[in-house]
Image 1 (tube, rainbow, N blue to C red):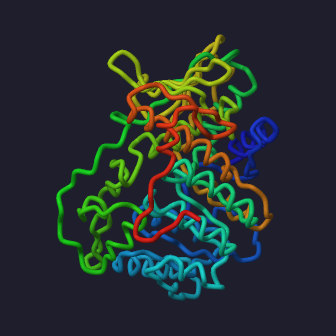
Image 2 (image 1 turned 180 degrees about the vertical axis):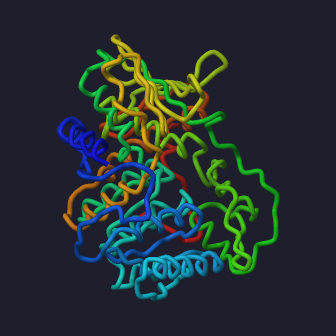
Amino acid sequence: MSASFSRRKFLGASLLTSAGISILPGLSFASAAPAPLFQVAHERVRLGFIGVGRQAMGLLNNFMRIPGVEVVAGADVYAIKRERFALRVQKNLTEAGKTVTAPKLYEDYRELLQDPNVDAVVIASPDHWHALMAIHACKAKKDIYLEKPLTFTIEEGQLLVKAVRENGVVLAVGSMQRAAVNFQTAAMHVQRGQLGKISQVLVHVGDNPHPKPYDLSAQPIPEGLNWEKWLGPIPSLAFNDLLNPSISLNPEKNETAWGAWRWFKETGGGLMTDWGAHMIDVAQWGLSKDRNGPTTIIPGSTDQPLTYHYADGVEMMITKFDEGRQGVKFIGEKGWIKVSRGNYDTSISELQLDKAPENFSFGAHHVDFIDCIRKRKDPIVPVEIGHSTCTACTLGNIAHELGRPVTWNPQTQLSTDAAVNAKLHYAYERGYQLS
């Protein structure tokens, strides 16, 4: 704990000015322990969860361990997942020796947003729902923890940024690498010029990074799943269990795979947004490109990977390197740094960590969100940064889909190419409106 605290103070002093982020003093980033992550008692924060699938279960466990946080409501279009959520909340309360109260459950998230007992929401829905749910939460004056990627389309992100600022809510994006010491160390050294001028950044998000057209066969819609509400604004698709993996409560059986909606262009952005929202985020952070972005995106070919060019001449390539982990490698005139979950290495001996990176834990990221609610300040990853990261990821998919280089203006958030601008959004269906 003392070594981690020392590292934390060091990183806090160096990164607060260079990256404009909030550092979490006094917190260890080791694997989650049974004790609470945050030891100072504050006023309570009452959370509602929107989307209570596999990702939400991990988020729930972390948030419920923060003193003063109460989970009071949950919404999902799948009845069995709502029931599991309620049971998990009550189980956590029992194990913590607290008074057991059942959360209110809703099929329609808009009813949860009308609940005056909900102060803030955790949104862990499929990507195509992120923008509408978050914008509606802004209008309901609820603070928001929003899973990455920020939005499904670039225009959605532009409007969400506006909604957050107009309504004065706190929005934290789930790009939790920024709360890990090894990623913070890498970003700090790059920003401080200790690699010299950066010429190239390698980013690995996984093999076959782009989404594919939806090709799953139709299966019967399970009892208790409101499929029309799951689809929401997107065009009609045949239900398949891979999109919404089945679970059972007696006997208990949780999801054994992530929802496959993330791999299809109708419902997700493939690995480009699924892991790019983590690793492209770290790359742009280190390059001091937060709230900025690339100017040219060249699709991959047999000779070259997908490549981003920035106005200052830096090149970022989406490609596998070394061990093939999802990660980032910064290459400068003096040497390199590479970083991934649980790993950190550099060619410059004095830039090495003083100990091996701890096992990756993102509990501190959630503590930061709650702390920012109480202090009414921006979190480590505010909406503008989530949007610039998500934009870069999505532009990679647009270039791939068009099959040619595309241009982008990070300031106007438009392209000189009409075909690119036409892909910044899509026509919502079923009467939904992006407003």
